[in-house]
Image 1 (cartoon, one colour):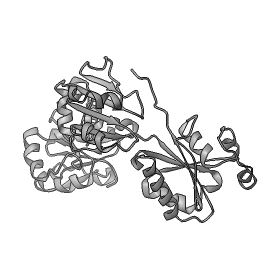
Image 2 (tube, rainbow, N blue to C red):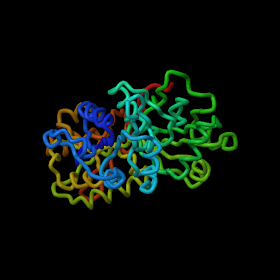
Image 3 (cartoon, one colour):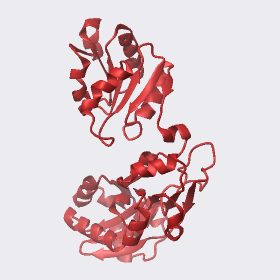
Image 4 (cartoon, helix red, strand yellow):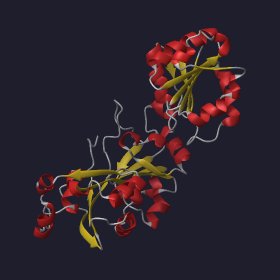
Length: 367
């Protein structure tokens, strides 16, 4: 099954509700007991099963990101308990009562998306959403989802639970942000007093006055910063680094990658914060670049010579213009893609590769 959601019912009323919801919930597969067959299941792609629903749950857990069960909450808890693993891998589970009055987020509310799915289902069937996650109820920072809408990646997850506890218990918390989108506070109320935005220097200097830290940076932390900020902190990697790359035709992926990895390490930059690679459109089919982007999941963005020449760069080259029609490749490509007015790394030539790096400016308001 390629759809993300499995919808399961085991009662007469539940099947009626499930068939209705199946038609409204995009990306759902429907399962119910064969004794409730209507005869149109094959045409509608509905799966029938015999025996206890408990027997099909392990397979559903392995194949779907969200499971909606029109079954009593107590029964669901008992059935799923033996197959639970952890919050990073378990699918989101939503329970709906037999009359469709309540949609309840049961499992993996944040990482598994059950809270969001619960709200969506409630809207579709006119039910009351029941969500008990403390950060959602209090309208504060959900530590395990922080920045997900911007593509931020959590690098250090070990302290997520105690940091979450500090946030919801209104203990002193600092948000240390060096890069990334600034408009992450999206509630219709001011940032709570117990959460402060600070610089890295301020956080280090006042380490005894806060209990937990949320650190957002593209930079590799020093050993001292790791000890101080991550003792009870979570580290997020915003997608803010753009690699401008030029290379000779036929340059292998391994050579390009070696230059990228070495340069990022020299500049104390995290490879997890690379957003994309940018280059001239003459290189849109360059196999080494395509292979590099495929390996790391990066987008390859290309520009015409005219588009590159619109960007003012530190060192325009007549030689590059002679062969490409652009006065530079790596520098203007990285700046244009990042929307930056300056370079973090102007230009580094190594073998067949030329590399420039630009940083995406922080987006959004600072309120």
